[in-house]
Image (tube, rainbow, N blue to C red; front, top):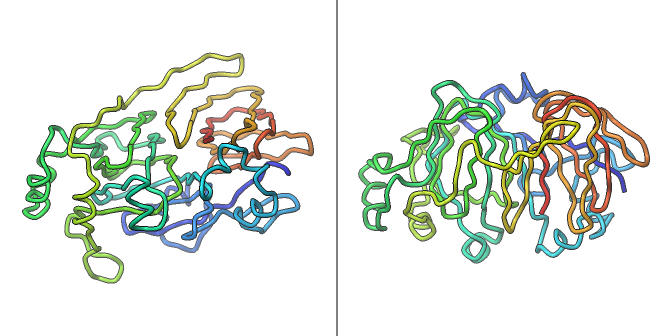
Length: 319
């Protein structure tokens, strides 16, 4: 086993832009790239290995060959691969939406629910997003406001800046606003229930479908409980800083700002995923080394230790 440098599948949703192609180097013939799934074993698009003996194999194929030792005991205990990590370029605003929890999603959709975390990589000066409600409402008011297009009157609009963090448990109403670039750590799910899409037409010229009944069943109609914005304990090290972005039952994620040599170890319980947000470095391991740069993603098998040498901003995630 060795660290896997990954190629991301990309998605051209109607609200996407071109920054992931122009600034992060994702190669595609698509006119715009809304999302790059930088760590994915999902049926809707899996990562492909770019290096070593497993080059050109999909990440699911490699993990099937390597077995649970690559995942670690905690990660292997999940029914299937537990994480999906994305870069999201919202040139336009996303729909107002919600994700179900595991129990509801497994029964109704046949996959996990989605708890997720957003890290604001960059944004326009006036950017904002929706994060829960600004006051508690009941289901009847929620349904009525969806029907009469006044839902945004009770949504919690939050101005954002680079470096902000939002932890979004399943059941939390949310929407990424236009002009925001996000790194998203989430459960391995692609289930989304839209409650409003502002009357937009999809690529087929028809309004995109809404999922009002299911959204009414899963949405927590309250203000958000978790702190957001410039949150997360920062610890100082000789190489730079480590900021804890989120920690929950599904994932733990940190932001490393490194200038020098930093050792990164995947625990025996879980693999570790790296996503380079800026800069470049050399990743060294017992069997060799390779360069990593902005936009690169690496899967480190459980129990493996690597050293990253250079100047880079890196998000790490494990379960």
